[in-house]
Structure formats: C-alpha cells, structure tokens
Image (cartoon, rainbow, N blue to C red; front, side):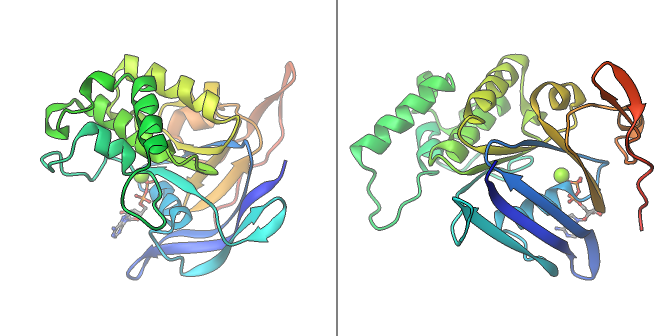
Length: 250
Ligand SMILES: Nc1ncnc2c1ncn2[C@@H]1O[C@H](COP(=O)(O)OP(=O)(O)O)[C@@H](O)[C@H]1O
Ligand SMILES: [Mg+2]
C-alpha cells in the first residue's frame, strides 16, 4: 500500500513542557488507524502536528503521492470538542461548504453547492440546512463538522474523539460513512470507545508520551484495564499468544 505521510522522530509540546517524544509513524492509503491512550497522553498533540497546527520541536514529516515525495497532502480534520462558538451567526449549510478549499475566487461553483447539498442529505441534515448553528444539537453540529472535513475529498481524514457529542443515531451514521470513506482515504480516529476501535479500525497506535504501533486491531486486556501501554496479549489466528513484550518507556 502506498504511503502518503511519514512522521520521523517527532517530538512536540507546549512552552517548555514536552507532550510527545520521538514518534515515528507511516500512514498509507486506506489505513484506518485508531489512536488510543490515557488522557493527557498526547493524542491531540500528535494530531495537531499532523494537521499542521503545531510545529514539532524535533523530527520531520514528509508527504508522498504515488510513492514520490510530494508537497501536498489534503487533510480533513474534525477537532476534539469543537471550538466553534455556537452563537456564531453561520448556517448549517455554510458550515459544510466552508470546508471547500478555495483557490482563487470566493464564490462557490454550482457543482460545489450541489456537492454540499448531497452531503447534507447523506448526513441527514437537509432539513436543517438553513438553521443557525445556535439552534442545533451537539450531534447535529458534529455531523455538520464532519461534512466540512470531508467535502474536499481529503487524502487523510483525522477525527479527534468525534463520538463525544453523538447520540446513537448520529454515531451509527458516522461509522457507516467512515467505512465507506476509508475506501478512498486514510483515516485516523482518536477514540475512547474501545468497541468502536476494535470493530472499525485496522491498526492501533497507543500514545502515551511515546507511541507504540500495533499492526492489527485486537484489543488486549491491558488496553482494557487502563488504556495504557504495554500491550502483551495479541490473538493470532485462533491461538492467543504473546507476541509483543512489555514496551519500555524511556
Ligand atoms: N495548549 C496547551 N498548552 C499547554 N499544555 C497543553 C496544551 N494542550 C495540551 N497540553 C498538555 O499536553 C499533554 C498532552 O495533551 P493532549 O495532547 O491534549 O493529550 P490527549 O489528547 O491524549 O488527552 C498534557 O499534559 C496536556 O496537559
Ligand atoms: Mg485529546
């Protein structure tokens, strides 16, 4: 599978406090990676680095297209606990269309507006398209923000705990959409819901200052107990056996 982004030895943090250390990760087309780890472990920090909102203190990131070094990677991002002011005077349809990347003119083309409306339909938001965001529920807002993140067909979609505000209906919808999107884009999903992690993601990255990558989606006892690394027990075929030793946190 062709890689689209390579992180090498990334360290990042805030002021003098380092939040993540020496993280290397390769993301390929059609990857569906679950980021798990304890609160404050650095998941959002790593996401911010990938999205370009936080400059790493050390390390490099390189995008690839068709296996060649590239300077462009389109990233769709749904931030943790949206920072949007719900009183901001913007309508649901504008939230979704604001994700359209404009290169030169400010007007939306007819085709883009059609795409916006299709997406609204798909996210079951058509009836709310003219509603102001102050009038909608948290779940509806998350769906609108998901629409915003995917409308420009990103190469990589990153969702930071998207299920925080979701009712069951919105959650089911979200995951069926993600499954379908994953056929044409890589997805990183930060989640506390291990059921979701094990049923949807293909691989798991455990982030707790440093990162440990597990090239499968088995949830182990240790993960269930504390969400902490290390991970020891991984089922392989029908025979559970130990594959990975304790991770050593430097
Ligand atoms: N804006 C910030 N300023 C200072 N410290 C921060 C900021 N955001 C996060 N941190 C700290 O960085 C560490 C990692 O946080 P974060 O990446 O949000 O973890 P997670 O998403 O896994 O809960 C924590 O110790 C947190 O307190
Ligand atoms: Mg976070």
